Length: 276
Image (cartoon, rainbow, N blue to C red):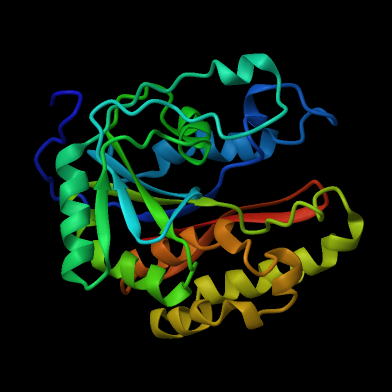
């Protein structure tokens, strides 16, 4: 396998994940209070060992890339985008030299287009921190090719569920599909005890929804804004950290979901989910 290519498909079907990626480069700096992110970091470090086989490639859906239509990173060696602000100088020197996968990007673009979803490849786009920060913990060797998929600007749940459905076949080719976001994301709520109970109620709803039968799961996720305390947990217009879950759930097909991590961080409940 060359750096910019993907090895032939194997028979191992990969699961689909929705993971939290933390706050900026939080895992690679001192934080007050200390230990705030240790539990999440430990979860991310354990992901690789939980998989049925080493992924031949990763398709990462990051909350930090929004475009008018779907876009797919198609560069051979994407640079990193340090799209966070006000952090220590050394966090802007983090590296993650994972190769891209232009052939996989072309396949993703084709599958989306065949499903009637406007898409295009982007050979200039780099890897944002929604990709490289969690992957530095999950696959620190940075030797698995990665393609990033953007979110559509309208953040329409149905469109992102449909995108996941269109890409589900990649799982049978050994591609690990990862939605990278946060199950709670309201910047005003972190560290505020008034958001603890609302975040727990929303998390309970989200878990019940993810673990429901697929048809019910999709219907509920498509109407997630009616969930308990939804506007407090994901303010309207800024729900981009939840939408990667829609792509993951769509790619899950008939596989049921389950919670694989949950913890109270900065007085808010945060969770991760796996399908398959």
